[in-house]
Length: 289
Image (cartoon, rainbow, N blue to C red; front, side, top):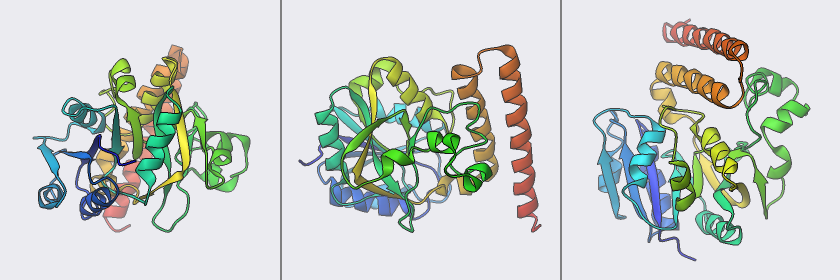
């Protein structure tokens, strides 16, 4: 098919991963217009965009403006029917982008099509999800209860294991990870793109929910494969990432789930306590505890 629309990569301290990502893009989508929006990286990783043999446009932000705002910034500088949003720590496998585009064409109601994402060891990452609820914190993708009770109905609802089986076909899901998603431009424009109040995390769940509220669908394409080295940017600034995760989680729950002052207060208290515990653990580990 030959993807010739735009690819947006938001970069922040991604180390050597951005170079590998761009190499995979050059192999799988040589005719795409690639835009790297760098959120004031301090590790020099953005220089991979300047060294790339493929035509890449580098946009340097003076500060870290967050993921959603950086994507919206990129969208304003691109054109075409589709746009691929790709994390710098992702690598496209053979045929991935063509599979996503073919599925989007076959399902014109779909606003987003996402691939099956693999960890570096080849295991399935679990990026097909059910809408987050107030129980997601207990039965999230990597929570202790999910590890102890992986077959529970709550765990299986949050991570849609049922739609990730098999090698072909696609399925409609509630939301997908923003690590890699092929989006229909007019659908993104209809909802105003990402909500820029989300600095990092949860912006993908919110976007998918708002798109579905407008009558669009979200699809998971099993045959499209992408390898993802999870969390490189987050590891470079763990305290920032931890605070951003919990603030975004509260924003999501207060916007979509916690409808009363009591439930919003309960969600804030639970997330604040969890955030402080995790920050304390980061400090303890940094001091060699």
